[in-house]
Image (tube, rainbow, N blue to C red; front, side, top):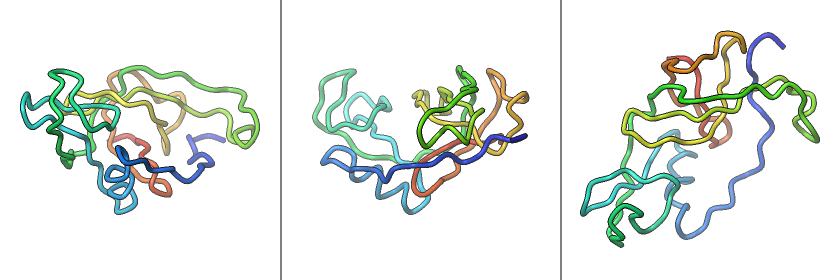
Length: 132
């Protein structure tokens, strides 16, 4: 397949800590927790700040843009991913500073590179990224 496809997904299983994140994703919005005290963005979603230990955290809508920080190409998938190989697994650094693991989609695999500007797209409420 010449470009990176959307991959099969399992529905998210929200928890108390992640429900607000997944609800926003289902609406096509990307929220990231942010500490009300030290103002640091937090990734992965949780109800306390790992920077200052504050329990005062608010989910904040972010732009959904960033750059590829690191990536790898999976050339041989297993199980439900077997027919989708090759595909890209990447760490994306959002403009707000947090890094999240995701997939790069809708781009020729050979065009993916560190520093590539990307933007969020939602695949059945799962945030993935494509070239910006």
